[in-house]
Length: 193
Ligand code: HEM
Image (cartoon, helix red, strand yellow):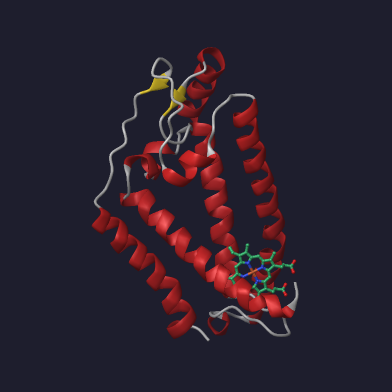
C-alpha cells in the first residue's frame, strides 16, 4: 500500500468501525428485520429452511437464514479487521491509535492478522457478489435495492413467510448513529495517538 494512501486508509477504517458499531447496536434494538435474535438461525432452523427452500421455493421478508450466516461472517471479519487495525504498525509511517496500550508482540501478531484477514474479506466480498448475481439471474430477485433501502417489491405473497417489519423511531436511529460515530471519534482523537 502506498504511504500517501495510509491517511485515507485510517479515516476509512475509523468510518468502518463506526458503521460496524451502528450495525451491532441496531442489531440489538433496531428495526425487527435487523435484529440479530430474529434472523440469526439456530442449526435446526437453518436445516428446516434449506429443506423448505429446496422443495417449495420459500422466501421470507428480511434476511433468509442462509443470508444471515453471510451477514454474521462479514460482520465478524470486518470487526476483526478494524480492531486489529487499531493496534497495527507498518514499522515505517502508520500505527493504529491504540498501539501504546498493547505489548509489541501483540501488535506484531495483530498486524500479521490484519494482513491475512484482508484476504478473507476479499473472499467474502467475492462470495457476496456471486450470491447477488445468482439471485439476480437465476432466482430473478433483486437484492441490492432492498439491501440499501430496506424495501423490496418482488415478494410473492403465496410463498413468503410472514415476518412483518416493525420499524423504530427516527430519534432512536439518530441517537444510535451519534453514539456509533462518537466511539471511533473518541478512540482516534482522545484515547489514542
Ligand atoms: C475494516 C477496515 C480496514 C480494512 C479493510 C483494512 C485493510 C488493510 C489492508 C488490505 C492492509 C494491507 C495489508 C498488507 O500489507 O498485506 C492494511 C494495512 C494496515 N492497516 Fe488496515 N484496514 C482496515 C482498518 C484499519 C484501521 C482502523 C487502522 C487503524 C489505524 C488500520 C491500520 C493499518 C496499518 C497500520 C496497516 C499497515 C500494516 C502493515 O504494514 O502490514 N487499518 N489494512
